[in-house]
Length: 89
Image (cartoon, rainbow, N blue to C red; front, side):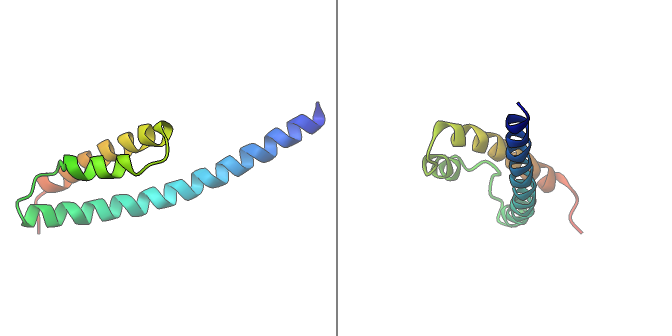
């Protein structure tokens, strides 16, 4: 039982490390999304780009990945919408 608990702890620690990396990568992605929002605002382009989202989802290897990225894309759209409605200085 002790060995199983140690293995479980090690696996959870590895998951925590990956989660930390994911947070860093998502932060970078969201910063880029805000830059995209600025360009879309300047070009009077809509926030929602269904063809781009379909491209992103279709290149993923599994339904699990698509489910996660669907949420990421929803958050990205919300960030862009919020950014476009903020006053620009």
